[in-house]
Length: 250
Image (cartoon, rainbow, N blue to C red):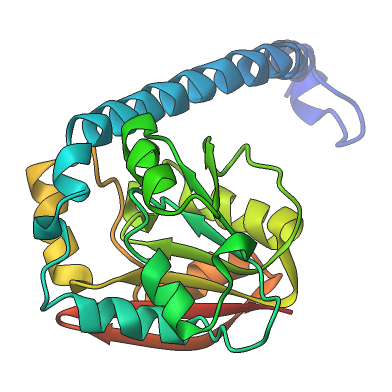
């Protein structure tokens, strides 16, 4: 048996040395490439977000005439919109509200009916066409054409996502931004859809580029709240034809 075959554990053979050097070279290359991966990943994500937002804006611009018509809000849907507005708990005078994906302002009359002053409401949307109708209908309300992920407009007592949460490019990132930068202490986030999750899934199948995500069920909600610990569950109504999730800022 040769010396190299009987080398004690604390002494490295030449083969072990070569393997160790090769491993170090691989780790060094990986470490050096990591900043470049991060640098290139961010622009790609921003590009995808911009492309998504452009598609959303273009689609709703083209459909704004319909959404401004009575056909967009049939009488059968009005009780559900009223139910959503009531879930926002707007009885306290001076309550401020951010309406994300406000569109033509379909929920605003129901917010007003539930007790909010429309001058205390800010509506955010990507579509200039939809906002054009909203501004005509509700001149006392402030409307902003912007992605809510970039919106910086102070803090609100209520932040509402009606019939738009599934359209968001990154719902968790948006909720994190809302919880940390836009929502008052003890404020509520309301995520709703007057036609429910099954209807939204059907829409997602017909246009997956428009609707990227399902609304969160109980299990998905646990995962989502684990990523946004500033929010906690207040209530969840997940019926076949109605969805309303209320979260509270801790």
